[in-house]
Length: 206
Ligand SMILES: CC(C)(COP(=O)(O)OP(=O)(O)OC[C@H]1O[C@@H](n2cnc3c(N)ncnc32)[C@H](O)[C@@H]1OP(=O)(O)O)[C@@H](O)C(=O)NCCC(=O)NCCS
Image (cartoon, rainbow, N blue to C red; front, side, top):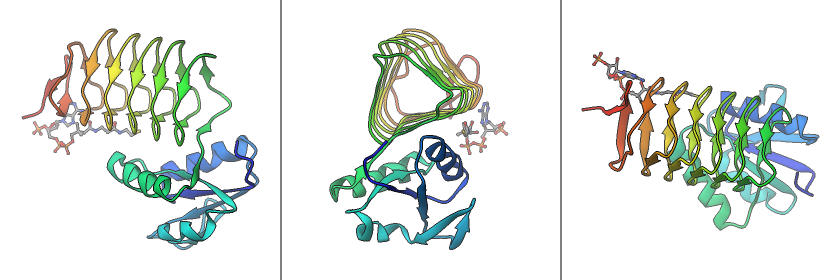
């Protein structure tokens, strides 16, 4: 947790709501949102302005970018980072994360997730509800391991990859950056061309 008292979450959507809940469980007492499309209150938390208003809060607040879309998450993340914002990670207390796991700043690890020994995860990543990432994996920045997905041991996943809900990546696989693995897919071969992959075994969509 940050030493700053206030946490501002960028993005008042479903993902943001879950992140606010994790933040509360982690001990943040002053939580609010910035969002371009909604005003008022969201999930009981105040929306204090539009996204670009973050500049007014750089001194007294820390930030979390809660946007599911990887491209937009990366964009806002980099903007905040450039301005020296303190970006925190949110890790649900009901997770199992090995002691030596490294998780980059601004990442979310949701309830029920398991991350095993030797794994390194980049910044702005999401390890979603009940997903698992096994031993000695390397996940790039802004990777999203969606709900109920299983990444087996010694897997390498490049930047900006979305590993869709309920999919499986078998051990020792390598997936290059900018891929979208469809829900329910099973990756059994290395993927070295960016694109969308679906099915069992996973194949590139045409
Ligand atoms: C793979 C995916 C990105 C494709 O989206 P899209 O490009 O909009 O594709 P469409 O929905 O237009 O579907 C195109 C075709 O692919 C098929 N298809 C789509 N997703 C598929 C999947 N996951 N597995 C197998 N086939 C799939 C469709 O049935 C359709 O087939 P048809 O042409 O025979 O009717 C998307 O369906 C998906 O799986 N998203 C994952 C979402 C997710 O994980 N959410 C979790 C949030 S935590």
